[in-house]
Amino acid sequence: MTDTTNPAATRVPPAVWLVLLAAAGTFALTMGVRQTMGLFLAPLNTSTKLGLASISLAFAFGQLWWGLTQPFAGAVADRIGAGRVLLMGAALVALGTFITPFMTTTWGLIFAVGILAAGGAGMAGPAVLMGAATRLVPADKRGLATGIVNAGGSTGQFLLAPISAALIVGMGWSAAMQVLAVLVLFALPAARVLRGNARQAAPAGQKAVSARAAIGEALQHRGFLLLAAGFFVCGFHVAFLATHLPGVVASCGLATQWAGWAVGILGLFNIVGSVAMGWAVGRWRMKSLLAMLYAVRALAIVLFLLAPKTGPVVLVFAAVMGASFLSTVPPTAGLVAKFFGPANMAMLFGVVMLTHQAGGFLGAWLGGTVFQATGSYDAVWIADALLAVGAALVHLPIPETPLARRAMPAAA
Image 1 (cartoon, one colour):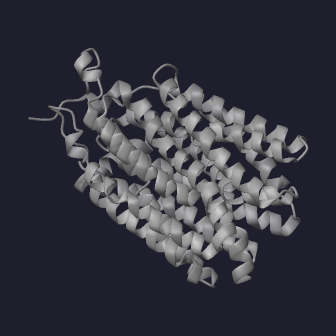
Image 2 (tube, one colour):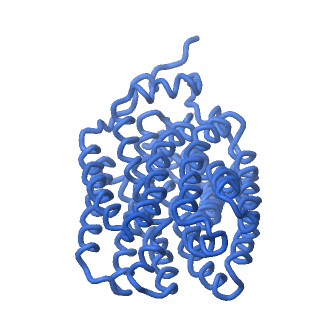
Image 3 (cartoon, one colour):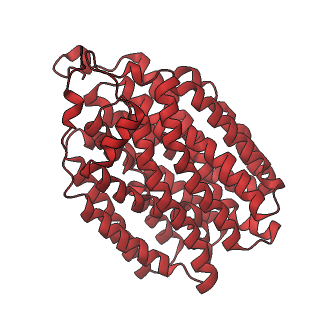
């Protein structure tokens, strides 16, 4: 473990800042493209005539597949290094996004959006990126590091959402989506910077824990299971909001520009929330921070349902939700690293992300299905608020103590 009593050990070298910039930049491009896909939902529906429920199914499958790829991508990155995994991931995101306009069936959209683009984003996603960050940063700086990487995804959303809306208006949704595909390729150089594997993170004098053993430890750890349950709720919330916020704005009778700005504001305040939460992780109990975030979400949803649906109200709601949108990631990643150490971080955080995306599948799919059946998103909002209350409560009994086995020296 890093010696945090030595000032030289706690100081972040310049090379580490380069790593964080590469990780945050990669996340900005992959997450930014994914989080703007909701803007293309209505144009896809108009073009393909498949119906909102069918298109939502493709987007929901993408949420699930994004999560399914992350434990495996994390395990491969822990073994052979993050750089190769990220290279393949960015290429797949670009390919899937580029060919989406050519898909005219539900299965075609599932292949392009749900398998290629979402799978590539999972490979170049938070599990691998957070693993690279925690491997190279001293223990007392990991919270801030994960906050910076997470803020990268929010920055991408903030920048790409208004750009995507403007491109859709100016050149059509099909060309706009292909421009986004080309932008993702700018993440390729970061793959060379983010090299390294789990063997480099194993403490001196301790043997590395195999992937199977690490998963076995995690599945028997009460805190890990509670953390995963809470992150399931986070996935439901994030996927529903990311996929259907433009539809929510449209159902309020507001212009498309309000939807673009709402998604952008969501990303902007996510930057603030991510960095602030990364700073707070080193100062307060992480489980308490998570409980507070979920409670804020529940309260914000209730107030939004009661408020008049005007443009400024939507933007204020987007700002509040943005501040708690993905700011759950730094304390969640911090607890995983605290429980098990950084050696298998990419894989174990990928397992947590899998539960997140299982919730994401339900959030994206139910949003479209419920709206098509009822003409309103209110039922989903109510379910979302109740789940957020449950998530706030489930984090309170989590024990914030490292796994004892990690401190045992390797056998001679």
